[in-house]
Amino acid sequence: MDRLPCTGCAAAPVREAKELQVPESKPRRRPAKGPSETPSSKAQKPNAVWFLPLMVTLMLVGLFWIIVYYISNGAYPLPGVNNWNIGIGFAIALAGFMMTTRWRS
Image (tube, rainbow, N blue to C red):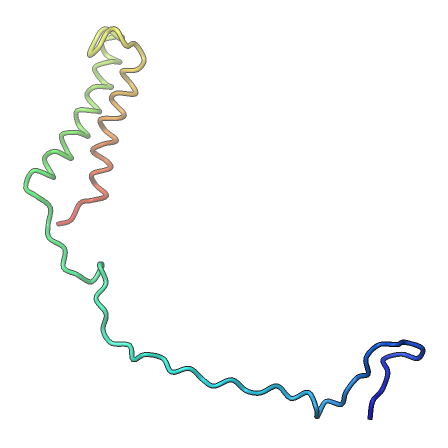
């Protein structure tokens, strides 16, 4: 039986719930999951022999650059760049610290 949603409305009639059945979709078959090889599961080679000495050297050179600048009161290591000596020292040390993120034993 058709009913109107409200009296005096000219809207489409509301149908019974039995008539509004939605068909079920077919389930999808998933491919079989086997052991997959990810980049993290591969055995990583250790770093080159020069990597550790260079990393430590860069960190120490940057530290000594800043210490020499403060102790010499700006006369050394590069007298013409003034306070940029601090930035240079931090950049050298930062290069060494960035190498630690690539460290593999």
